[in-house]
Figure 1 (cartoon, rainbow, N blue to C red):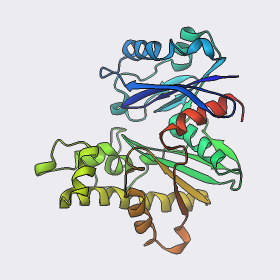
Figure 2 (figure 1 turned 135 degrees about the vertical axis):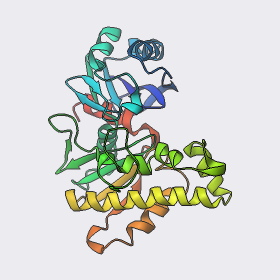
Figure 3 (figure 1 turned 30 degrees about the horizontal axis):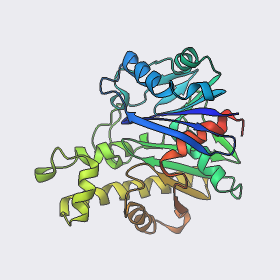
Figure 4 (figure 1 turned 45 degrees about the horizontal axis):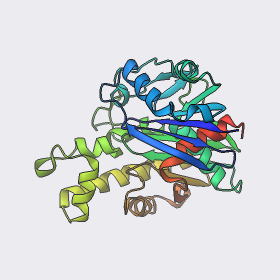
Length: 289
């Protein structure tokens, strides 16, 4: 059976056909609609899935935000604009006529990365550092989603009580500091207005402020990982996302984590499935694996 997998992110939409053996076919993507309204998202998804849906027997969605009872509910409304309470499962069921499952994208990615470890470890966490900071936890071989879909949203734990306000409404969240949006928001002077990708490029060129912004993000993430280790006693933490997988970023995180007490050390890995972990994790969950 072939799964039509959909990944809905704050900056891009991706779709692909995923076979039972997790082989990806016909992957397509486009930017998330700038207006981020229900009509705009529905129209964009319809265009993306139309050439592929006849080849699929089910739909699996990995989406940013909280997924509760098939609805998309954004913990950080800035990431998805006006899409609070978007009926995600019903919309795709109406568009395709196929059985549809939806899960948070980081939770889905955690499940894919857990499978990539080959069943050797039963306790792991996945953290994505991208537009925001998200996460997923596998405990004793089971993916934790929570009764309300909130489980694993580690980006909204406290990093600095005097830090910047996060889009979720709290002050000093990890996401407000370590994410791509957080890195860009802290830029000043010659870097003001630059996005995270540009700041990474400037850091490679030796720009001192750019290097400091990335270092601040990596240090914040390392402290988060120590907290996750203390909370879950996980055996591995897998890092993904456009910032998390950027050249040299994981090495900085490892260096900062090494400065924490040994009790909080844990093995760190880059995401095996890179930017397709959400698609594949959703497909695995739809397969019942």
